[in-house]
Image (tube, one colour):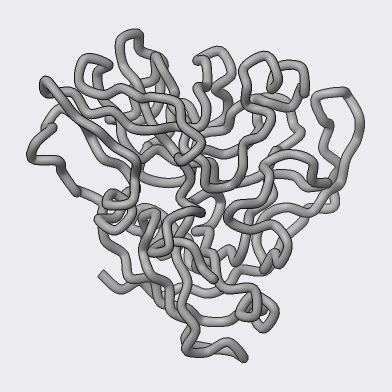
Length: 273
């Protein structure tokens, strides 16, 4: 399904936020075109608030905006149809407040708010016939083909770069798992190091045990969700780095193993040059 969208302009209410150390902050982050924060960039170390990589696209119409967020899946092709970068193509790498799209560096240099794009949306409703108990969310067929997976005895396992314990899950719980993302509260460097998550990058796959993301997002023992890191750290309490759900199910049907080769930035079909 083709969805029409445009690069959205950043907005601000003129109010300060308060970070996890009780400091007032006013930081850039969402919407617009970010040329230095991209797929493969570190998720930490930026002076941003929920920093969205690449080009953030959507629609000024609320219903159309929600539609493109729900329908767009990781790995979908995005074609620029207006502006100086007209004709260029990129990929959806996640959703947050907007649909996050990665393009080649020279394309991002030419893009600006208001540029029209077309998202070739496909993937919602995708099923695994060999693993019917594993539910897919926000995952295109092309993205599914690039995931590091292995299966045996009726169980699917996915390679991940880190494991997020349930007590670190923040904003996004209770929301639909077909759009936006859930935040992981990793503001404290000591917490990141304690769980081996200090080197996470945009596009890294992570496992979220005791999370059931089939019909929303919430805590449930014996379940697991696997997702991809899509935005940089948000400093406000209850927020953090963003993770979009790709697969979820009972832990007897879905598992994971740790590997450094669990990042969509390494997939030529998804990463822009």
